[in-house]
Image 1 (cartoon, rainbow, N blue to C red):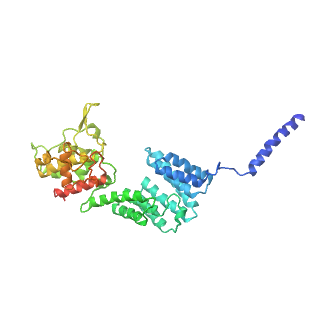
Image 2 (cartoon, helix red, strand yellow):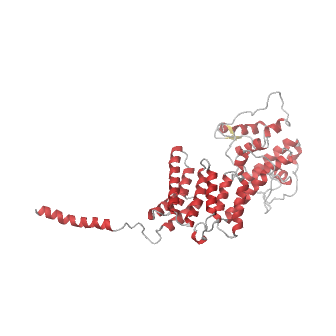
Image 3 (cartoon, one colour):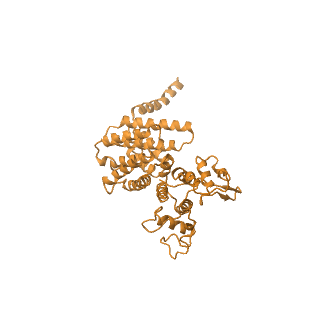
Length: 403
């Protein structure tokens, strides 16, 4: 009896604790700063800085604190899309994509203000641009249309700080979708909305890039390879080989102008092992066949063999060197290779008149095929971006009357 009484007395505190747990709501936040809006803003800034794992953690914390927080789910969808984009395993990628759209569904379900709906529309555009699933650009355009119709107080957008963010991310989508004229117009809309907006600097860079692409494509038909290369921030050796073969029609043009020593069809002397599985293998071999100076294989000490280095970026100086050789081969004037030797002074402070690149740079700039900076520099060591490469190839084509 005493044992039973003792057990009963010991169990009373546990019973009260259990009852207290049932009647007291769970406290999820630990401080004033531990709130959904704070974690959302930190997460969005982490996205801007490429810290996707941290962003995902912040958004997960935001929706943990408030299970109906629409903006948190919108941010979580973007962070998850960044993760899915970088996932090489197809199975894991599909799992992550399901998580992305599950988060978007919740964001749509819980959005009950125009500002939340706006954030969802931007998130939809950003997600579609990252994942590029079937019909993605049409989906992005629909979200843009919906977002454009919303009446929003700018103060309700503490992260985006203005509705022009919608046009900026639609511009990015158009650029990724190779709709360059539409991209330029979208970036221009951001610049025209107000002078000091959060997205102005990025939109200005986007406008300048797409404007160069649109100018480069004027009057010519650019194939898919040219369009894809045009969007890149740098151009590799394999990219440039593809651009020359596909857009300048290098093989056809050289075949009629460069004599072959025998009746046999000219072919590349060998296939470098590092281009065996390159998507631009045939284009690389074509430039090798015609011995385009600057795009020759290079001896590798480690493997004791000649490699092409297809992924190596092309600098502006190298680009001038390569295009000069194409020009010389096309016009048949070998004197161009030494036309500027002995010139007393260089017009470019970063390209001396004694530089091995000087003659090529002068040949390209005096013919308007490549341009220097407004500051007067040529930037020979900087990588060529896709827009500049396409523009240079277009002007070269005009100079030798290809199109």
